[in-house]
Every structure is written in C-alpha cells, then in structure tokens.
Length: 121
Image 1 (spheres, rainbow, N blue to C red):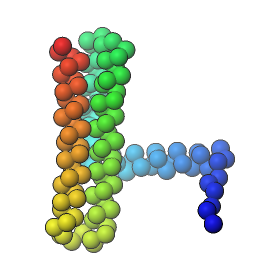
Image 2: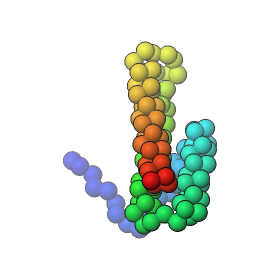
Image 3: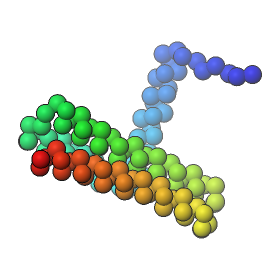
C-alpha cells in the first residue's frame, strides 16, 4: 500500500529545512563550491557592470544554475559511491565518479561559452 505524503505547511517547512541543510553541507564538503561562489559573484557583478539585458540575465542564471545543480548531483554521487564501497578503490566506482565529475566540467564549459556570448558578442 502506497503511503501518501503529508502536505501540511509544517511538513513543507521541514522539506525546505532539509534542502537548506543540504546546501550548507555542499559548501562544507565540496571545495569546488567555493570556486562556484566566486564565479557566481563574478558573473553577477559583470552583469550589472555591463548592463546586460533581461534575456541575457536569463541565459546567465540558467548557466550558473546548471553548474550548481551538476556540482550538487556530482557530490551526491561521489558520497554515495564512497559509502557503497566503504571508501575502498573499485575500478567501476572510479568510472562512475569520473563521469559524474565530467558532467560538472561540461556544465562549466557550457556556462563559460554562455558567458563569452553574453559579455563579448
């Protein structure tokens, strides 16, 4: 029998609390998150200095968000893999973690190209 989720204001507040805690954990556990903060601040400052248009802001927000989302998912995948293999090396886990890290790299490249288009063309 499927259990229905409680949709009260209190349960939704708990969900937001868990998500906020997840963001805090991301900042504590992932050194790259600090680099993403610096890049995000740089993009926002550059956007204000260059007076980018509304649609350019949309592109920048999506680009920055893509990097943050992939970094969060990459961190989750890495932690789950480490947990499942007891922090011991396993060739298949290495492949999984490398591909997960590649997703962040691809997101960063897409974001960089987006920034180049917005700021220089």
